[in-house]
Figure (cartoon, rainbow, N blue to C red):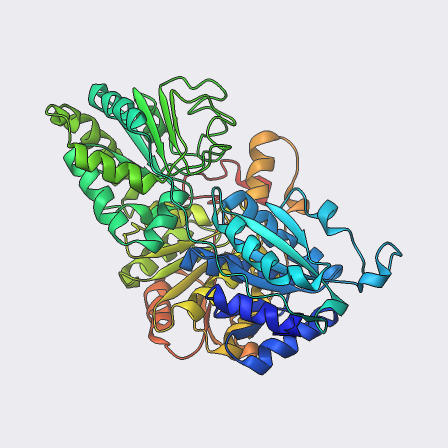
Length: 561
């Protein structure tokens, strides 16, 4: 049956269960636009910036564990979206980005906005697929989704010339590839069981690959909990994956995020075995390649990750298992715990005691604005068991990880690699994907004005996130790094920000606007924010710059003058 490429692409997206696409309209793909709108089977979310559209698609991919989809136009459109590709690539997030291109007859002439996307995107995508023959259109979509979702997940770009959409083809629909989960080898399970049985102070890090499996299969949480209890193991969620293990569980071994507090890290370093279970391992998780040390870890390392190319790439593991982490958990449960597993109870309790002390709702007031800890602790009181929390990049996020005790069933979204601008778009996507549930975004004053305009997208499509904006008048993380590295040099002129009245800014879009300028206003202000159910809320919090993070303050206040 002959049909246009645009129609075949639409049918291919439908076959891959795509029900929502994010884009900024562009002339290079109007043929696809027309086909999708005519079919009306996929909701099209029109965004205000390609970076916002890309972040929304990345969040959608995390929420479904299926590749989210963004469509961008050629040249400037794709360039704006590259921040989301970079984030998805480093975060191992499945994403398919369809990119418009000049007409095929103009290739190589430096036509309007023409770029060589295979060269441009080679370092921020798993693959760039160029569709220059109509017969390859559906095959390209099927390959893109398979690559994006397999092994180490990540972004795949599909490049579509402007003139291909109206071309006719008799090529059939290429069906989705089945999901493939690799099982552990019996001999590897034997070795892992022996290593765990012998260990007196094991440390189990759980990360993104296990979280992705938990989206597909809710039994992951129950199985992980049972493994922790039966085998008497401490479980430590890794950087920006806090919802993997209940922070109130007695086997919670501490949050293995960026810059782990010294008391907890010192105790963790007493471990005699590290199991990275579904954790890719990065510089953030490894405390800048020091724990485990790269390339030769200072303790036996078991690395479980569903991609043989990643296991052993940086660290030399004692045991590498390129397979599904959930399959490893289930296999260990079938084998049963060692009889003397209780020998580890004191080790687990010691880690948990440090974790609980760090989680305590304690902070010191600040004279130059609100200690953001007070805001975060109040928000935590209102979070539902199925709430979604997003954070943008910045030191303000450290307060979220210190003071919110995440639970399994809650959702946390952020750019793991620390790209600014992700917080608001991800919150909008979460509110669209999970309607009638709480969605709270913690955003700094810097990130808020990068992609905060996507609040207009929220209003347009009925999303209702709560945006908590920490306004300390500076790029706080950069100020901290400047102060720590060069304490005697001035730096404020390079980090200071002049900000709007964010509450009024929010109201100008049609959102509810709330201002919190002192600790006395926090309780009522946060309660008002959570009471609004029908539109977005912007909470403008005047916060301290002296309190540079949840753990550190400037010790010389004159540097902020």
